[in-house]
View 1 (tube, rainbow, N blue to C red):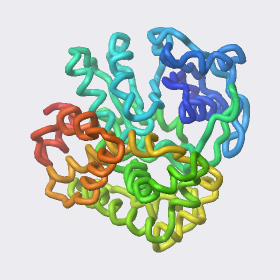
View 2: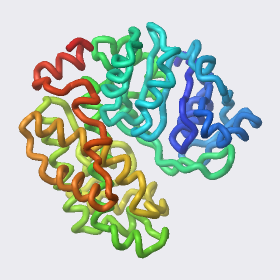
View 3: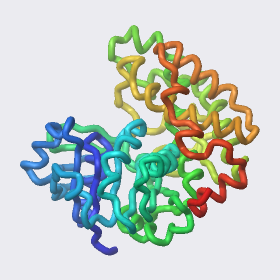
View 4: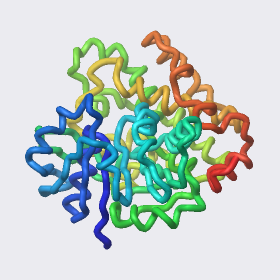
Length: 364
């Protein structure tokens, strides 16, 4: 394993877990957070380290850098670990400092690589870079102290697609040192569709909406919300995600297979039989209100682009479209207008073959 210089952009649960993971492994880690949230990482800056407990244990040396240009300079990988609805905002922040040969990595992605690249293109600031997507956040984690993160579970391996796919050999050796055993996916479409959160979260929250509001924050999604019939409905919407992958000829892992494959839980014939054996999810509270990322992120950024892509490919996505509409009605928002779309990803009007060629070469 080569020692890498890596910059983690973001300061939340996943960003701190990633910084700790890389630092404990011996890599040189720089952490950057936007000025509006910089106070949250001030104690990490003073301590010069993040302590990890649980599935990852140790003290990781971390340098907090307040200037984004200095934070990015010299990094072999720029790991953006923020809620997916902020990825395009980070493209704008990073754009002036991106140079040929740099490697941006979104974790997770939900087809954010396409939105990231399209935003740079519209700004006229698209150098020769790679933009990769880690299919899903590899950690089940929460911040448990000003300089501490607890990792309840860690995926057995990470998987990533690269945009453009022809440049995969440029970045995958770096990612292999950061995520030992990482699986190289065919392209970013495969990576984006392998984020299970949109089909795991959105419909389940809608079906538990009254319980979430009645509990006044005392709600446990996986223990209370994932009942046998709710799990059955979630499998139905997940089947639409799998059908989109099949139409594109890429491998998409079902929710039923995800947990055992990633080392989180037992194998089973149904989501219900699997999810009740995932100990890493036990005791994780939330969402505490309907207006939470389970809907405000996973509907506009996940289900919106998934459903539009499915409709473009001729795949039935009635459940996805229904959840997008119902979530919008529930929260009084137009999730299609504000969400990640074919247009914002720069792929509107592309048929299947042209889309696959675009993600392979970067040329439309």
